[in-house]
Length: 148
Image 1 (spheres, helix red, strand yellow):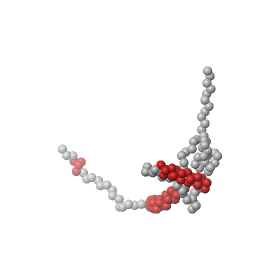
Image 2 (image 1 turned 90 degrees about the vertical axis):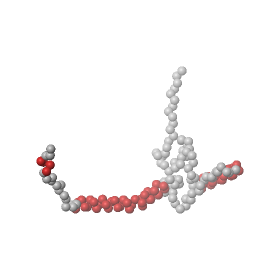
Image 3 (image 1 turned 30 degrees about the vertical axis):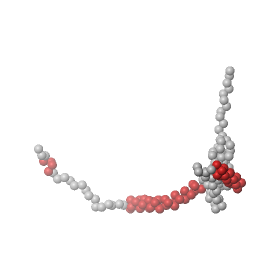
Image 4 (image 1 turned 45 degrees about the vertical axis):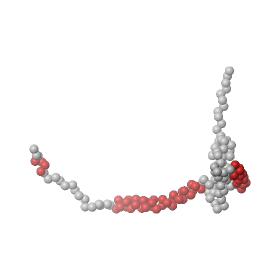
């Protein structure tokens, strides 16, 4: 039941004498490692720079970077808590109105208010956009005439 071919010697696989890389392959590996190290080292400073750049657009001043030393943020809101009396609530509302009036007079933009009605033209940041970039109010098409 056994074949005579099973006793034949099995050829061995050729073995290499180590890893042989040419100059071009070593150069490519070195460049890849250098890029990897550069990406790892530059990730934190670049992410911080991009973060401050992007956050600078949300400052609300509407005049460029807006993160100057003279732009102190004043909170125009008053905190209302459930344990306040009616008089304390009225006083807080009056203080908030006074802060908003003072902010409007000083030219400092308060925190964003609720969105205005479409077409009112007083949207946040509308003064900094060019006429072609401003959002236009969409007017509904005229109703078709009805014939009796």
